[in-house]
Amino acid sequence: MNDDILVGGHISRQFDQELDEIRSRVLKMGGLVEAQLDKTLDALRSGDSSGITDVEKLDRKVNKLEMQIDEECTQILAKRQPAAGDLRMIIATTKSVRDLERIGDEAERVAHMVRHVLDNGAAPKSYSGLLALGEEVKELLHDTLNTYARMETRSAVKNMRKDQDVDDEYARVLMHLIEFMKTDPDHIAGALDVMWAARSLERIGDHCINICENVIYLVEGEDVRHTKLSRIKKQLS
Amino acid sequence: MAENSKQTMNDTYETTGIPLLKDSKLSVRNVDVFYGDKQAIFDVNLDIGKNQVISMIGPSGCGKSTFLRCLNRMNDTIDICNVTGEIKLEDQNIYDRSIDVVELRARVGMVFQKPNPFPKSIYENVAYGARIHGLTDNKLELDELVESSLKRCGLWKEVKERLLEPATGLSGGQQQRLCIARAIAVNPEVILMDEPCSALDPIATATVEELIHELSQNFTICIVTHSMQQAARVSQRTAYFHLGKLIEVNDTSVVFTNPKHQLTEEYITGRIG
Ligand SMILES: Nc1ncnc2c1ncn2[C@@H]1O[C@H](COP(=O)(O)OP(=O)(O)O)[C@@H](O)[C@H]1O
Ligand SMILES: [Mg+2]
Image (cartoon, rainbow over the protein chains, first blue to last red):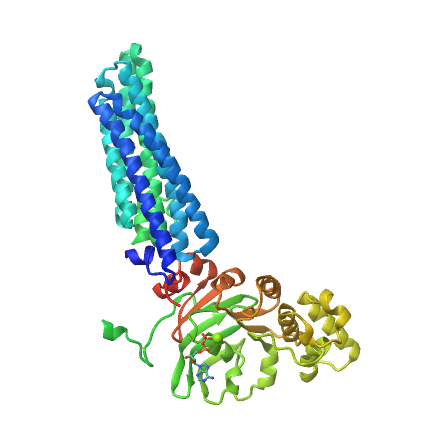
């Protein structure tokens, strides 16, 4: 699908501008939540928790952007009564913005856990699996933001497949943690922290998939929520 | 490519969506319309369902009115206009020689863009059709017909005290509802409306739209509108015309959320006017 039909080409150039503005704000918001996750993983990797206050600061910016974009979408609905692709664009945007905001929240939750674990001097061994999971989710988030920026259904489907890898990795981390807790009952509290963090990372993956589904809806007009991947592929071909 | 896609008079094309139905009140096949040697409608195929509202949308000059006027042979009144193809009302070809056009227009009534009441009383406006179509001449029956027609159009309460006053004294919205009352007084099967609200304010428009919705219980309604929002509000099906071709016909809900033809999308989203 070409760019023009998504935001440009209206007789009303002002409408084009409004849509374009919303789109760049969503992309900016995506960049911020990506930075939240990056900084969190950096702290985990380096054992230095000083970057985590940045994650909190970013979260406030993300929240603000969510409200701003929602307001702009509301204005467009009220003033322009968009239809067809424009309508889907607005619907998909308000939904995606919500997912982005949640991703920010989950990243912040992981960040707090990381700080907690690091401050208590936990052994890196217990969270090496978490880092691997984090890297996978980070890649998925990055790809999802690209999918959104380019409005590509093909990469949206690819990301959905990748989320299944994330789910598998999450299951591995859990198994590993359960084993760890059995053999080392003294560190159950720390292990539970890691477990919650893993859960948050897995949730980020789910939000990425919501965004990918929104992109498919926006571009194709197909609602692919609660649909098996194999079926989605058939539906889109 | 550019050369191939250029449109010519005998260019064939297929209408996107669902133009044909299993059950239809009106069925239009291979209809072309010419004004002199200029073709205005190209090979239109369309079924119109019974007791449904279908709206015709498209840029100005795309042939909406021309098409609508085919459905009750209103184009016959334009000398240079020539219609070919087949249009069936139930099982009868309305262009058949045996068809009495006056009778046809009683079965397929029309409401125009500008409210056009006759310069007569409110009462006479509604009673007129019944008289000329020989429905009744009986005063009591006429009274009843006038009352029920005005009631169905939600106008009775507003005008019952002034039935003998000139219709031209009514507001624009009232006049348009009066014209609709006049159209339904002869008990047609189909009502054609050509931009019936374009001369009305938003409140009067809402009243007429509500009326269209109610009438669709008993009548088949084809409405031409330049307001996409109106098409979205009042019709079950929407037909999109472009340069005389019927580009897409689909359920209104599809056309306004996910039209299947690029030209429909561009028009609906305000990219072509
Ligand atoms: N009486 C007429 N004589 C000649 N050409 C006409 C006449 N009425 C309409 N046309 C032409 O036919 C085409 C379709 O017009 P019309 O059906 O009025 O379009 P719309 O209702 O979609 O605006 C236009 O090019 C218009 O100029
Ligand atoms: Mg017209």
